[in-house]
Length: 304
Image (cartoon, rainbow, N blue to C red):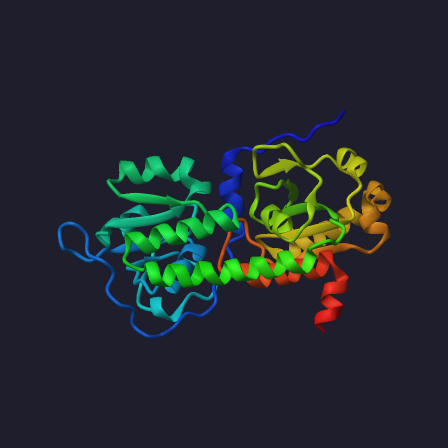
């Protein structure tokens, strides 16, 4: 049987860089001082990804450094120093800010941890690979920086939305789902361990790729066609318009796609990059709403 091949960890970092999710505008009100460390000094925190910056804003924490991004960042950080893109932050600029904590994500830990250590920078790699991972991370940050109340409010809202989704899909037939993650020039298959794969699971769907340990795999259309999913989700990252065109061309020119039930039944959906990134983010509620409507059209119709 034709099998799917795992992708190198470095490519995961590229996907994070290309798929950095947009950030909703934060409050312009000044935050309360974070808890001081053992020396009595307030923490000087640098965030290197947009998703982390979102979370820190929700926790009402100040940042001395933020990622360089074309995405909209919270107003709270309008005077913070840009420190470069998530995959290759500017180490000298970060050092010049004299940070106590530099925050990245576990997806990039393999590549970045030795670089930070070599530059004498204290780093913390946050796990945002799933909704529950993000919630646990938010609670940990809340405890660390004296923001337990804010953390409880954020995670509580997510819990409430997950409970609503679970109730909405209860007793309904679980659709089988194929998730394609596109980057300029190629595409991968997302497993249940990816963020989008986790959203599918939370929404009651069944990922056709089971039993894998990695987040993304190389695509093998013959193997995928044998699974014949009810739904195909296409997530375009990086240059989104270019990737969507690539997907359209692939589906038109590769004859095998017309044999998929999802294609025959018009159940191929393009996911919005802002909501469906490569790591979890605070737009999870809106993402779940969109995804549930795709997987269960009757729910979307009843809410309109």
